[in-house]
Image 1 (cartoon, rainbow, N blue to C red):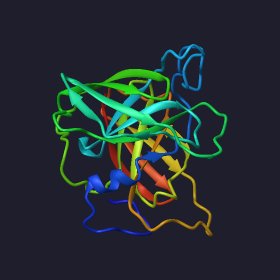
Image 2: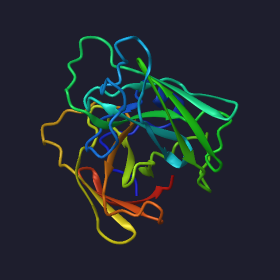
Image 3: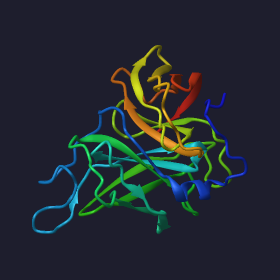
Image 4: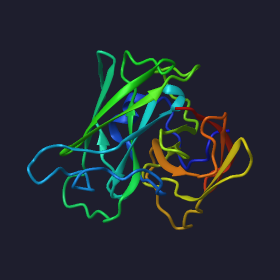
Length: 246
């Protein structure tokens, strides 16, 4: 079942969508804080790059990867187009520019990036991520039946990161009205129910169709087992999607 969205843009290619909006707000904590002397990941006082722990998850059937970093939940960095060479995928994250006011929290948030040519999601990939004054790396294990490239089907999807119990949920709709997670809980041995908040009745949304990603977690989950996310509340009506392993 496809998520209920206010608008639909027929014929848009994935590349065009990613060029405009490849960010989404995180809604829960549950990751690992960055290491080094600067928890915001802006670099050490002497100008050297600091190390930050990053995570990643397969999304959209293998067409997208969600890069999970720690920082302000309201100022999510944008992922530039990824490159792939010598078995390593490299991604640069660009911070929000201008006079944007950012909350002073430290939360996991997701930056979306298209899978570059040469990467086979069925085989897995090593990922190196560079930000403003920091760097990090992570690995994504291969997942059978996932494949990069081609047109998106605009269906929601989900993928585990390498942090225990943490996963990313991707949906499609208005870029200015991203779903907000209200609660996440394991409701059976193979299902995790993610409940989204009901948006305000007077909410005004842009009329675009964009990828929106949120990161959430549940301690009771067995991320080594075949598990499904049940998306409910907000624009979702008990949508059942597999959580891609990592």
